[in-house]
Image (cartoon, rainbow, N blue to C red; front, side, top):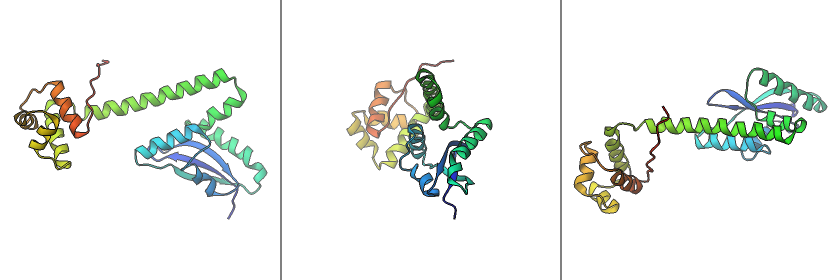
Length: 198
């Protein structure tokens, strides 16, 4: 089996290539990224995937018979996938050799902003799942039952009256923010209040 390969790391959520590498050790080198990559952006991306219970897909893009051609082949694949609009982490590393440090930093800052935008969208989406008043009572009840805590125990631990907890779970209470924060804190949740942007 040929050990000289060009490989790609693919995001299983989007089917998009995120990194292209070369190896004289076959797939072993490609798999080493899964535990630690020399590219800090790849490390960050892999950690993000792991938090979502995913791992990158390792794809052999090309077998290369002569190891001296690996650098040229890697450049070819970086260019090809970039032309196909794959957002590769290689670009920042490669461009940094040819451009000024200022240019590199601008690209890095933009990439961080793009990632923040994606994370904020995920956060907003998850917050919207529990947007109505009736959802709050259902959320508290489900979490309490998951933890195998009685309403009385929740009342004792949180310092919120038993009657109030019963009414909240029945969606018949206009509980104050302070009351909800005590209950959520006891159940291991955090309550976020965001200013609407629209």
